[in-house]
Length: 374
Image 1 (cartoon, rainbow, N blue to C red):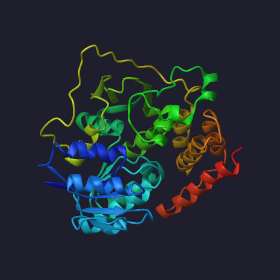
Image 2: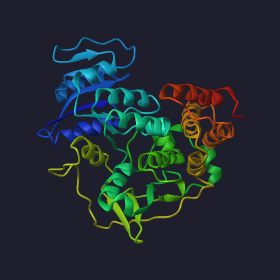
Image 3: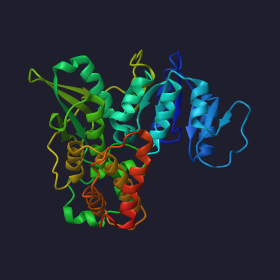
Image 4: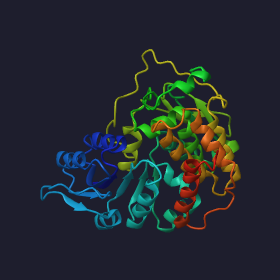
């Protein structure tokens, strides 16, 4: 029996994990969870799924709860107390880095659905995890697939990584019409059910840019050894090119339950985690991304090449620009304009420690808000 803690219980990753674990009750037991703002829903889920420990990471007052649930206010304290087999980090955005650090301190395996941990922390975070002998298991569907493919093929036999992208809802929209897109429309992803910020990032492919940076750090492949292809069906989650010229792919329905349960069970599937892939009338399409339409992807490759703090600036500026768009203060195409102008600033200095990263983030975030980027 493996024990698990779910960080971000009420989000899409957290609720999908609960759905998956319900079919693996003899293999995985959820012993703890965290929530930031949706406290009432989290308590309800804890009661439904017999989760005995809950950390509230905001200043929200804790409602009265049954004695069966212990409330924590310090995430690191809960993780170190429980010492679960695995911690699933489903927290959205840059706040996930601090949670990942706390998970590493507890000694638990880290099932990482928070890509910002690796984008921001880079080698510093991965070295920190290795120093503490903590296994980091990627949970993004693309990186989970790559992890499995590389393991099966052998790292020495893989020449290139191929990351797929759905292209979002506007892959065929006329460019001039992008100015009329509302935050509500941009947050409506055609394939995946996610929160508004990540859905908007998926529509601009900023999210894919983050995944390119993440793949670079996780698997040690340089930019010229990473490809991005548009694949609207989201059935092929990633591929690898081998030195022999062959291509191997990982296919499954577009359901995050598969990579989540791969991580929580330790890759040992005793039964299907979700619905089987139906090949009836299944058409799979692929094409190269148009970087005029999706400039965020090209920006991500350039950030890897430049190094320094460019990946950190990329992520922080995007968070700020998307926030402005969601508030109706800028138009959809101006998300990239703001980020691009921030990336034209000097981010060549590398952080010397994980503690320096929030300061760099703040500078990039504020550069968008203050107009330094404009």
